[in-house]
Picture 1 (cartoon, one colour):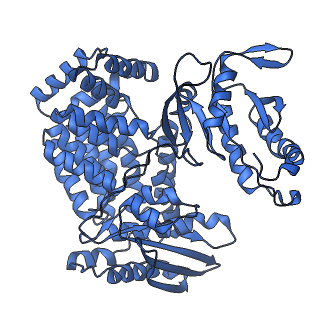
Picture 2 (spheres, rainbow, N blue to C red; picture 1 turned 90 degrees about the vertical axis):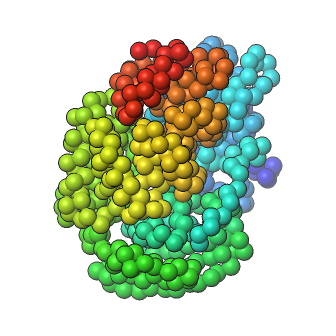
Picture 3 (tube, rainbow, N blue to C red; picture 1 turned 180 degrees about the vertical axis):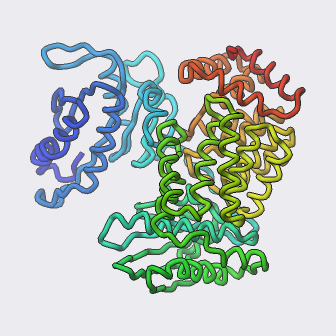
Length: 562
């Protein structure tokens, strides 16, 4: 735990009194005992134990231990849920033993949890987990699958995602701009500038631009540019900082060669707050020029278009767009409330209406409600967004979602295609185009669009992109490819909803993997006991009767209940 053995006792005392005790008390837990330089903790629920673990690790990062002569302290935390025996205030049993066996396998500063604990919190906490696979633990009769908290260090034994090949087009990733203002509330202002730059660059057909959800994974972290380049598969990286003081703004931007880490171009922009969107436009044009990309006349006109001048509304819009992931009901509800704020703050901004359409349309496609009712509401909001600003590309993507929910396939395809044309580098636009074509039986188009979406956002674990690759391949009858994408998504800790469990079970059954099929069905019924409406919604969105009947038969043969 500590580098300075002489200070260990004093460090443990300070750690216990100033960090562990307050956090444990806040999360309805108790310190069972102190064991040398470690602690045994008990909580009333798995949720509380995970939240307390994260809080401890986060607070430890910023806690000042300088009074201990520069002593550094790192904790490993192991969590399990199981039966215990209480004797004279101490606890024993399998629940304690497994947690104790997990802890040494965790990287310093990290958190490892058992598969049982992960099952309790998977759809309830906004945390990403890496699947560490099954481990044989001492004196434990069966292998234990362990999940590692992705925001902390994970064991080096976990195989990283393979490096991505560079695209043929000039490629760039825009990292979140640092907020250099003393006011931490300006974080959303800095995020908004980053988001807008990504959006503007994404309109350019001659560029490959990584999606916001993948680059914001690096927010607040010290990054190595060549590593970022390899992880995201880009040749160039943009990073910068924003300082907002009163009604003045200063933006510093650098374009960096991702292979060497050397600067290609750098500049500083100063101006009044009322001219911030003009400053953004300048930054975008300078990046495009430095990459030697030629703009078409249409793209030039799109870049000249300012969708809103309401900075506060745009900041809320940026928050709202990142809120629905992972797509659990509480986060969808929170995102909807934020989009409603955007509409109230800036009724002439299409983003608020498009966002509300997106949330409602999502429920229509994958939720547990009547898709026709929700689809009609989502359609009206999408058309409202288009009426306000026909150049706002996202409106056409969400319109495609609403029309697909109503089985108006030709109109839905035209709208989704227009969304991709306006935002060729938008991962969500491509993924909706993929879903639509998979449901229409246009499998080659669907698979290509799904793979494009994933390539644009390769490390956004909470996103739907691997699921949609799996879905498109399943509909095409490519069951091995469907399972490869499904298992990769599960291993990354990605979201798995009722339809994904259905097609995974069907694909396992079709490839002769009966045990895996049964396990997928068991997980489906355990996690989503009311999955029937979602399954019905999914089947009804398949256009061709023959394809729908084939899919329904595959579900039935795999043992999926009606």
